[in-house]
Amino acid sequence: MTTYAPTDTIDLTPRLRLLRFPVGQACLWRDGGELTLIDAGAAGAGQPIADVVRDWGYAPEDVRRIVLTHFHEDHAGGAGEFARLSGAEVCAHRLDAPFVRGVEQGPGPVHEDGERLLHAQALARLPPVPACPVLPDAVRELADGDVLDFGGGARVVGVPGHTDGSIALELPEHGVLFTGDAVAASPVDGQVILGVFNLDRAQAVASFHRLAALDSDVACFGHGDPVAGGAAKALRAAAARYPLG
Ligand SMILES: [Zn+2]
Ligand SMILES: [Zn+2]
Image (cartoon, rainbow, N blue to C red; front, side):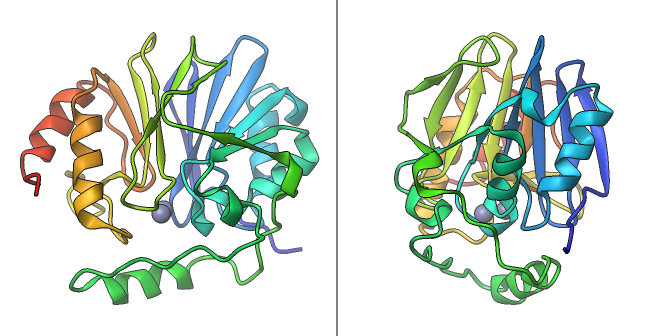
């Protein structure tokens, strides 16, 4: 079976381990004896994620939930496989849940200038195997404002635009923010930027501003280097370059 492994992992805080895949990234968060996985890589990532979990001193069964920031293959493709081998609950916003389940094909992005080639290049770096869909009854549907039982209370922040059901997760107690693809860091210079390949750019810009208003210290993006301190300031400076329509 094809596996899709992270190229490296980075411990951002004692509780937070970042898994960098060839395309995009996932995060593991720990609360004592239990873990939460935020995004799950592409198809074939399940077993390699289990290896990272073991390397951190845990068993795959210690991962209680997989929270998907949106349905795209580079974030959700490995969720079914990892859910099967860990027993973790899979959580996704209700608008993206049908695509996570694999019962419907999600809509493709509306490309901005120059994005079509970038998108094709990114897709070419994903493994050529179909995602193992999450079992239909195994998806817990989320809504804006829900609070999940990890990280001292993880708040679901609806950030539509990249996809209709895109979410961010805010851990106010720890000053940590997971943005999914609503925000990214440029692969060229690390600058904080609006995520690319959006379904609705105006909506994505509004969501970016919503995240920039939060008091985050550490921010993890779907793609690109995280901000390990002073994230709110970096996001606000970046948001100023994307005026609201
Ligand atoms: Zn995406
Ligand atoms: Zn992505």
